[in-house]
Amino acid sequence: MDIILRATVMFFIMYLLLRLLGKRELSQVTPFELVLLIVMGDLVQQGVTHNDFSVTGAALAIGTIAFWALALSWLTYLSPRAERVLEGVPRVLIRNGVIVQANMRRDRITGAELEIEMRLAGIAHMRDVAWGILEPNGKISFIRRERGGDTDSKQEDDDDPV
Image (cartoon, rainbow, N blue to C red; front, side, top):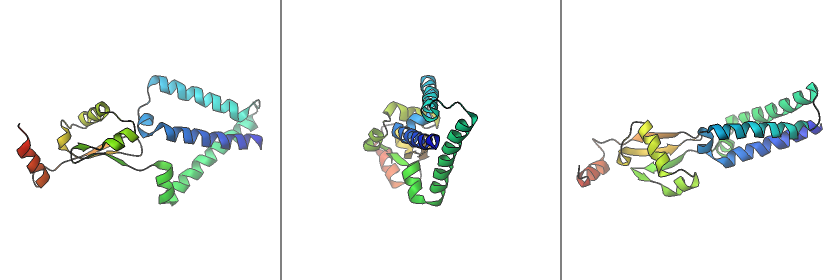
C-alpha cells in the first residue's frame, strides 16, 4: 500500500512539473534535457519503490502510474472542461500579422523562435500570417492570410513599399 501511495504522489508531482515547464519546452527537448528527464525518472523510481526491489513492488508502482495516466486520459476524453485544464488550450501568438506579446511572454517564446517556425512552415514575412497558434502539444501552426479578397491585406499592400 505504501508503494501505491508514493507512486500516486510522484505521478502528480511529475504531472505538475511537466505542466509548469510549458508546452514549448516539451516539444523541443535538447540532449541535455533528455538526460535530465532520464535522471528524474530514476530519482522518481527511487522515491516510489524506496528500498523495495521486488517484482511485486515494481509491478505495483508501474500499475499505479499506468492507472493514473489512463484515468486522466479518460477524464480528458469525457470532459471538455477537464481537457482544457489538463491538456491546455491553443494560444494565439500572431493575429493578422501582429505578434500578441502577452501570449509570447506567457509561453516564453522569443521572436527568433517564432521566425524559425515561420520559415519551417514556408512563410517569409509576418504580414503573411493571419493566425499563428501555439497548440496544446507545443507545436506552432500557421494560417496564411488571404491576399486576394481580404480588405485588410489590400490596405497593408498599399502601405508596403515593395
